[in-house]
Length: 77
Image: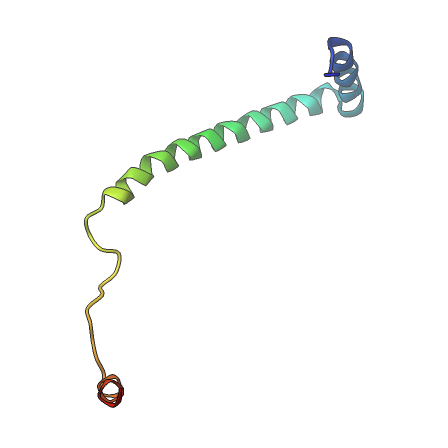
């Protein structure tokens, strides 16, 4: 039930007729560049993730500060 060799040739022939050889060449070039860019982005993303996980520094300063309103509400409770 899959696509056979004859069907692939018919599809290729229709694509060539519709787009033409010049347009098909530019589409292939653009598609190849997009795939290369995607792979490069995936590789760069994989390299950055372990660096972020190994960081010993906290993301934010969680110094506890209290205001006068907080102190009054705790005394009432």
